[in-house]
Image (tube, rainbow, N blue to C red):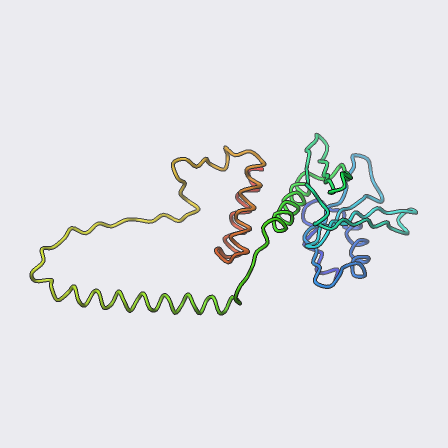
Length: 236
C-alpha cells in the first residue's frame, strides 16, 4: 500500500509523515474508499510530528500525532455533513478550513500553498458531486456501441445523398465551395469569454469543476482533463 501513496510526495509533503499515515490508513479505509489527496502541515520551525489532512471520496480525515508520535488521533467528517470548504493563503503557507452543517468549523494552518490548493479543489469537486450526482444509465461499452452504430447510419445516408446528387451534376450549375477551418476547442475562445489569466481564483476553480463534470460524463478524455487542469492550476 505504501507504493500507492508515493504520488503524494511530490509537493513538499513530509515523507515521514506520509509513511506514518500510510501505515494507519490500511485499517481505516472503508470498502470502496479511495484516497484523493494528503496534505501535511509545514510550520516555519522544525515540526517533528506535523498534523495532516487526508481527503478521500467519502470523507475528510484529520490526523494528529500524539505521545511523541507513538499514537495518532483521527477525526473524520463525511462529505454529506460538510457545508463548505475554504482556503486562505498567508505569507507562510495557507490555512485550509471547512464548516459542517452543524456550524462546526475546523481548520489546519501552515499547509504549503500548492497542497492547500489541491485539497481545496478536491473538496469542491466532492461537494459538487453531492449536489449534482452523475447518473450513468448504461455501461460505457454499450454507449460507445450505440454511438458507433449511429455514426455508421449517418455515413450510409451521406453516401446515398451523394449518389443521387451526382446524377444531376450535368444540369445543375456548379456552386461555389466554401471551406471552414475549425480550431481546437482549447485554443479558441468566444468573443465574450475571458482568458484564464483574467479570471479570479474562484472562477478558475469553477472552470476546473466544469471540466471534471465533462470527464465524469464521458464527454472528454482523461488526457484532455489533465491538460485543462494543468493549464488552470498554472494561473492559480
